[in-house]
Image (cartoon, rainbow, N blue to C red):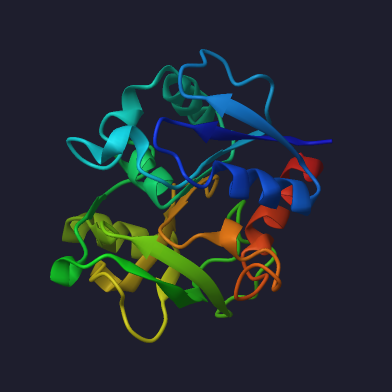
Length: 224
C-alpha cells in the first residue's frame, strides 16, 4: 500500500482531515512531525493548512526552516509528489518549490466559504482524475490567499500549462489571473489555497470533488 505523509507543524489545523482524505483514497497516511529528520519511507507528502508557527513574520516563512522541510525539499527535487494546501501552499512558495507568494486578501478580509474552481490542467500528478475544464466545489478559508508573481513568472506558468485551478465566478482574494493552484515544471509539486481534504464526502463537505486530488496521486504512485 502506498504511504502518504502528512506534516504537522505547531499551529497546523488540517492534518487530521488530510490523513482522512489519504485513507479514503486508499493509501496509508503517515504522520510526520515538523522536527523529523526523515520522511519515514513515504511515497508522497501533503503539507496541510493551518497557521504554522502562528504565521509569524509571513505565512510559511518559519516553517520552511523546519527539519522536515529540508527532507521534503530534497525529496521533491528528486521527484516525490508533494501537495501544499492553503498554509501548505504558502510554505511551498516560501521554500522555493513553487514560484510566487501569497499575500493578504484583497479587501483585507478573511474568507470562509464553498468556492467554485475550474480545472485548467488535468495532466499533473494531482489532477489526472478530473476532466479538463471541469468545475469543482471546494471550501476555502484563508486571510492571505492572494497569489502574486511578476508578469514573467505568470506568463511562464500560463505558457507551460502550470496553472492547475482558477477561481470560477468571482475571485475571493484578488489572486492574479484568478489563480487558485499551480504546479512545478514536472507537475509533481502542487499548491492550492482551496481545501480538497474538506471535500471528500458529501456528508461532511459540500461535495466529494476534492477526493480526485488524492486518487490522482495514488494512481501515479501505483503506476510508478
